[in-house]
Length: 579
View 1 (cartoon, rainbow, N blue to C red):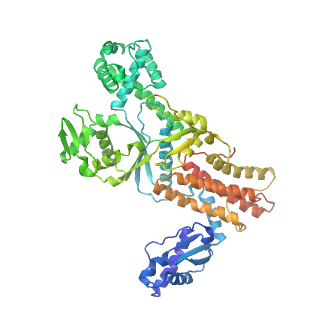
View 2 (tube, rainbow, N blue to C red; view 1 turned 90 degrees about the vertical axis):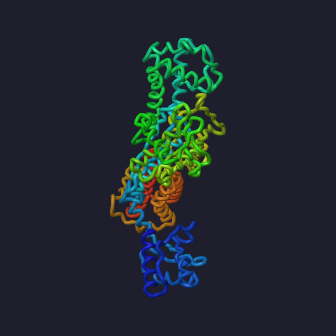
View 3 (tube, rainbow, N blue to C red; view 1 turned 30 degrees about the horizontal axis):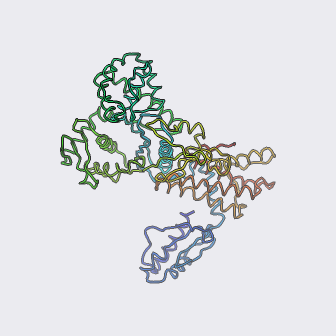
């Protein structure tokens, strides 16, 4: 409908230009929706844009434009408001066309080709494989998967990726924690478990599986443990323990390291698949080391003159690229930092030919954004092609009680536990009810309610209600509308037009949700559409005896159900036909 009004407006401007009454036509014609339908269905400020060039009052120019508008079956009337806005009021036929469009395009209604030819990489979750995913990670998973769906619906070629941090100190700490639990099985642990080790029960399970696989083969490394610093000494103790295990176990350290990594990563994969989150690739940080990609990236920075050595460490001069301080690439012991791996990984992303890269990081990683962008600029890459979305963790409540979490201490609610309690649909929907960078309070009790207070239930119930109407019609021996050819001209009531008006907005919401990277816009829209439908359902008799009217109203209802299903699918939520 917007395109039709824009075409009519374009025709009027062309006529005025041909008559010499305006010097030219603006390159783009903005048509906005007034906040209140009393001010029209669409509004244009073109008269205000032309006022300076024409040298006349905007209202006078608006009067000329309205007079030049061609006759239309869709435009009922126009109104000039305020300093010169042109408000367009549309005929019911325009809204009937929207209903017909939904019924014709079906599951494709709302889709567009705005992103055609653009290949985007989305990297999200990428939690360290040091423990099960918890409810905080679930928000990034729901957001990333929903955004991927929305971008695909907008015509983008999307490649989803999980970056597996399978190298570095945290994985070594996990390996050391597993080893201590491995010893603990036969009471061979002579001191308290380290404070900064991983304490969750899952570590004991991994250790038990390790013992089943290797028996006592790793037991010999315990010989030197009594000479280590007391385990309460924090980082000194854990780092000394890691060094001892690497030296004592030799090649067997790989088996210890892999025991935790493989089991936890398999659990993460299974959890995300069960949550409806799928990736084209799981990218190993270790592969960057194995292929020499980190060496190559660091050498490129050195060759370009962006590095210096200080106290045995290699530093990247990040301050020359707007970062607040320089960053270490290689420590004095020769080990690369996480930052060096990040530089290599992002350089490799762009080498794969992506048009744009979107990273979704936890909000606590905001300080990493300028340093990664600085490294990209230093490598001669366009840092504007990297977009970082910061995702706040969700805060879990059971009613008014806040549930505290500590990953290191092993005190947290896993994503799997959340899914089992409230279901995938509620979890996926509740996670995207706010902007990613806003705090999210997740109320477990609300997510399980079967009432209009629970937004996902309220929306799914609207979809199921449509199919309930169809079942009722069949039980009463009433005919259902055919797939096409239904006359919609009998839909004239204000609530019917308002409902069709809401349907019309869906493609616009899809486009802006993709542009703004905001899946919550879809969630808000669906709640509004469901509310409009429930109001219509409760106030209007739909299964009337008069066949043409019944068919028209059921067709409108089916268009609503289709739009709800399309929107829920983008959010990874089911649209049940029965509840």
